[in-house]
Length: 49
Image (cartoon, rainbow, N blue to C red; front, side, top):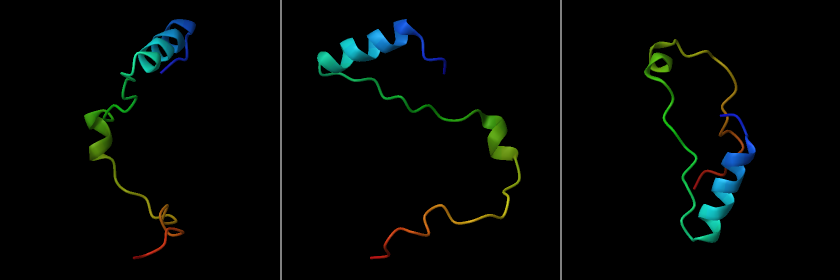
């Protein structure tokens, strides 16, 4: 997502109006077919309840 001045102003105006846009979009379906790689657990430092 390129950070253009138009997108910045749109986000500012939406936030000022109390209706900020949700920036999350689901990744393309092609990513769901990729194999998982072994690596460090990104949540390893979170406390376990």
